[in-house]
Length: 253
Image 1 (cartoon, one colour):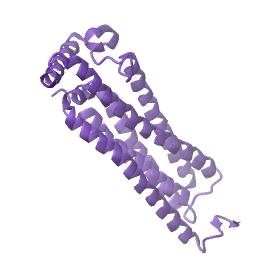
Image 2: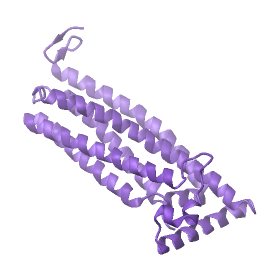
Image 3: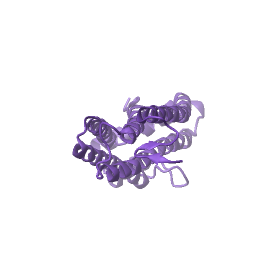
Image 4: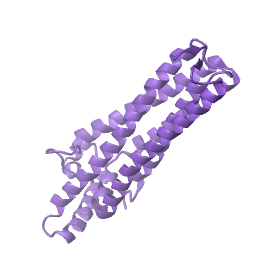
């Protein structure tokens, strides 16, 4: 395959090359929709089946951290869009600046998510032998709960156990623990997969930044920036769906 400047040999013009690359990214994103769609469907079915356990599991998530990450990703979408605009109008220095800002925001998102994961580990909410959905209700100091929060935690736990007890008398807490593990398995699976896509996106941003420092992107050629922008916006949109599903539905209801 030969290359003349930015034009690869299988294309006749840069415009044709850009249209083909953009179409390829849209097809890829369609397959990603199907991929994430299966997880969303699995979550929806199980949420309906085990609403009490899933509701209580969602209440244990840190809404402030989740909200912060939502704001961070929305800002990263803005900076990514601005980098595409800067490339289209020939503001080459701004391309680099906006790409760096996007990378910083993406890294911040992953940092906040790491804090959340550590929090779940400390609260014994990692699916497995040590999983205990009632840990914070029994260890308020270890979870940093105030007296008010502890009272709310215990009240919600009792309510969830009572719901599970109706279906299997005497085994309410055991069933709640089992079904809550299903919630957290989906939580870690979905957010972990999303974080993996963020890491891939961060790698692409590093490559774009290095290329933009060579003044490569401008009105005549900006396909990599635009195509990566599509990918980044898709990842952001996935989180916009994950946040309410995992953090907000039936919160403290």
